Amino acid sequence: MNLSVGIVGLPNVGKSTLFNALLKKQAALAANYPFATIEPNVGVVPVPDARLDKLAEITKTEEGMSELPPLKQALVEFVDIAGLVKGASTGEGLGNKFLSHIREVKIIAHVVRVFEDADVIKEGAVDPKSDYETIRLELILSDLETLSNINEKSLRLDSTKKSAVEKLKKELEAGRNAFDVLLTDEEKESVKDLNLLSGKNEIIVLNVSEDVYSDENSTNVIEQYAGLMNMPKEKFVVVSAKVEAELAELSLAEQKEYLNDLGVEKSGLERLIQKAYDELGLISFLTAGEKEVRAWTVKKGSNAPEAAGEIHTDFIKKFIKAEVISYKDYVEFKGRKNCREVGKARLEGKDYIVQDGDVIEFKIGA
Image (cartoon, rainbow, N blue to C red; front, side, top):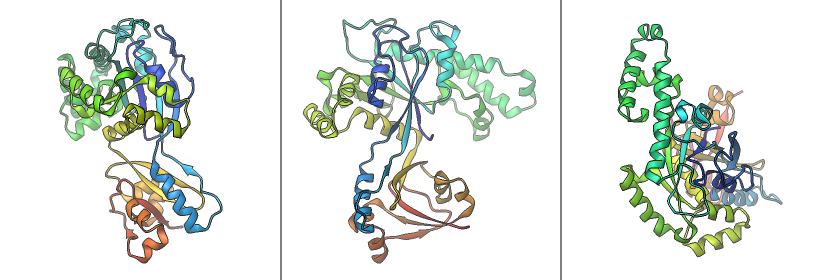
């Protein structure tokens, strides 16, 4: 799994409602009281990618198939993690149980509620800025505990790790996050196994009410809270958990119509996943054939053998060449055969850096 997103936040900010909507089923208990989610709920969701539908149509025509080939989208794992309260790092609420679940995910999505609802019990939630800071502080405190538990003898034997730990402690004690600490590449590698919570990539999910949910308003909301929280606008995404829950009950055509009525181009799911991709530096390459049309997720900057290894690890060693066609050319010239005829299919070697949307056929040795 290349992409796992942990949904976190104080109780009753909309985490479980959003999670249920993303999975299109009531997989978590979205009850109006604290700690409705006791164990982390995990679900795998396909990544929306309209390019696959177009490739499937082209493949059907090109191969003379009676039916469209199966589609296999890239996958994202969402983890709905039980709510925490101030003091979680010292055992309050669900305490370290909550924090240990965060350790397993690639990126943290902090859900904060930016509207008032008299029917919802707040249970510790105050406002988006302080709610976020409460969660962030608990992650920092947990990391400080992790650092303090490192065996002193092991640090004396590893000067690089000792230097990294000293830098981290100093900055964390000042209230800064691990991902803000400037470490050398060697120092980063030396503490990689600690898997520090405040060192994980993050997204701030602003959960707005249905009546203000539109693309135009979302831009204004992001600007407002990015300024208030002194964070880059790129870290934020706006969703309405209530709208996402309603969309989950509709057909694709009905979803599109509903979003149009709201003035929203893409669903919260699509924007949240895209934001996670951007934060983690992920892209998708595509494969197309009679057996399936599929999207594969790789890190931006991956070379051709590394991309082939996503299909099967043996392909890394047995890689010979990759036939690469851009998605734009593949669609414009209606398939691989025509692209070959007009010189739009390129044979690339081991040093080729895969681009988002590349349609690739790998040449693998025996």
